[in-house]
Length: 175
Image: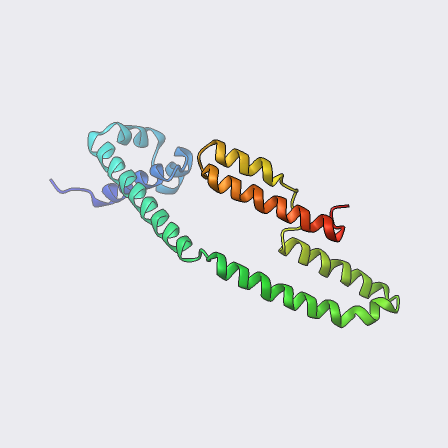
């Protein structure tokens, strides 16, 4: 008795489609089989084993793809210094653009004024000035409380904050 390979290939395709989450109605339609045949196949131990093997291969492929994606993402991480350099370069370019249109702004050109507002908005976002303000003292206190920084580091941070506040009050920037 010879084995019917067309049925075997249909079983493999059915198992693959089931593992991919394709509905039984679509599987039946695409493979040209009856629902009863598909149901019978899903009850066979060989088919169940085939389907489990395919599902395991899909899982492995997904894990490998995810690992590769994470590795590629890690390669794209930029350092603090690179980010600082990028921000500095972008700010420099924005300053050049702002300086280039200032004579038009001073002349009352509405389009130039609109551009100036957009350039200044971009620069403030780039520098993080559009973010909500954070109470640094509360943040330092919380970090010290949970042991993320030592009390000595917290004291140094509070000292630096006091010094900065004092300098700002001398130049009148705190009002």
